[in-house]
Amino acid sequence: MGYPAFIGLRYSFSRQRNRFTALVSLVSMLGMVIGVASLIVVLSVMNGFAGELRGRILALVPHGYLEFDNPEAAEGWEALASRVAADPAVRGVAPYIREKALLGAGRGQRGVQLTGIDPAREGSVSRMPATLVAGRLDALEEAPFRVVLGATLARMLGVGIGDTVRVTLPRFTATPLGLFPRSRRLEVVGLFRVGAEQDAELAYVSLDTAGRLLGGNGLPSGLKLRTDDLFEAPATLERLAATLPAGVRPVPWSATQGSLFRAVRMEKLTVSLLLLSVVAVAAFNIVATLVMSVAEKREDIAVLRTLGADPPAILRLFVIHGAALACLGVAVGAVLGVALALSVDRIAAGLEGLLQARLFDPAVYFITGLPAELRWSDVAAVVVASLGLGLVATLYPAWRASRVAPAEALRHG
Image (cartoon, rainbow, N blue to C red):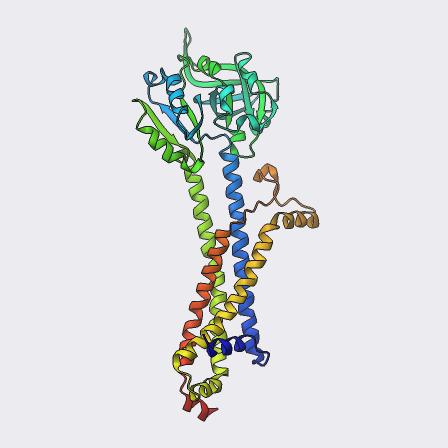
């Protein structure tokens, strides 16, 4: 860049500038620092929340389902399960029976999703066995009419291990007195907790118990699948769809839970754009800094033009002058943002100790701390976007500087 770079950098960091111009320059850089650091920290926290959400909600959700549309399709489920399990992208297959039900204990009642599972196979398709906080999952098959409840659901109903709950199903039994909904008492043999809404919405029984409760032939509603990669599961199911018999419908996890994660991504994008506007305001403060610098350096510009500097050289000089300010602000902001993102959990814990209060009540938020996941791709995107805004902000003042007439500037100087 030659002498324009040398002079531009001297303008940026000279101690002999006008005090007011120096103050505006400092405010511009501080705005860049705060904006960039805030954007990196907020994106990291949102990544952490998304990871927590994905880990908790998808702990009990398989990567996909093969749903049976009719009993004929369900009759050969064992052969189908063996064939699907042979696929190299499939890690586990397990049958299930699912139905809405009403659970009651005392005067409390809650609507739940009652799921019949094979305890021996469930661990191959979900992390449900690892979420048990009391009891045993295999106790479901030791005797009929046993149930495993979510810890929140059990607390709402006021029951624990060894207690009984009353289940009412949308099936009717004909009696001489008329039609009555099917109801049965179940013994609670286990409690699970994932720290999400499923703790208040799900109840598990064995396949045999589900078949007896629903009064059917005991055939499963479908098969649960776990694949090698959660995000490749839709493509894997689409590939398997070509080999499935009639009446078997593949349903990826994104069809049941995808809207939630799309909402999280949209929220992240919206917050990013809002915080980027803070960076934009700080970046365009550079416009004011450069305009004041051009007014302050009119005589210097005239001298340079007289010595042979052409307008493009003056343009480059002030672009470098503004870009140096932007780079310094973005660099400091990026370092500060990364440092804060890596220690945000410790900062939150320190604030809790200082304020003697819980920032996140586990009963309300299902978390005990502030999660953060720093992604270098986010840092790079923030840095590039901020530098781009800073560079754009330098163009107009630099163009104005290149248009200064030497004779007029020297005459009025």
